[in-house]
Length: 148
Image (tube, rainbow, N blue to C red; front, side, top):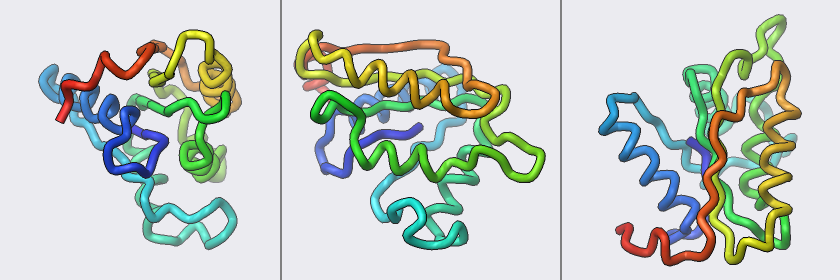
């Protein structure tokens, strides 16, 4: 699971952890990547500890869940940076090949659909096209205010 905010109480982070909780109850092994400490793409080498963690989780996964807030009509820089660090290929291996992808977003109003398009386009740019299996949109913040 990837989420696109560094705020302590981020709704996209809360939504990602709620999905993780539900998937865990259904028997899935879930891991959530914390983007704090992930350097900007190309700022450090691929051997940086946080980059290695992100890439190993991407390789480990059979499916991925991306949850990102809308910011200025698009995905956040924090989220884009995570996507940029996921390798498009490792030799002849495409790390995203055959993976299922679910995307979710928390938006302030239903009229801000640009981020939805950006999130799906980002996924579609990955080699061998991650299968976008679900798109969950929560309009407003009241839907998840009950989360801890």
